[in-house]
Length: 84
Image 1 (tube, rainbow, N blue to C red):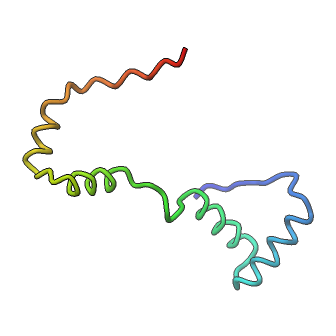
Image 2: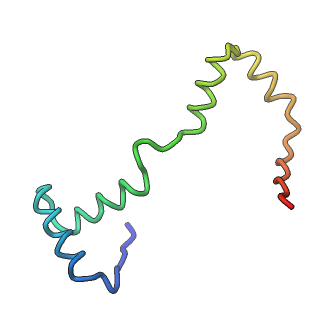
């Protein structure tokens, strides 16, 4: 497991974290871990694979049609747009 040191944390922020941790029945360290985990992996994040699968089903593509599209792709990455 990685360890992180946070320097120059304002006293007010540390106090607020301690209060929040006590409210949630956790140690301050456990509370900070929970906050970081929620920020790094939000529940509402877009899962691209799932979104694409849902889209293909909504428009009525079958597994065979999706496989055909995948076979015909050239595999080259798309060129970024130039906004000049």
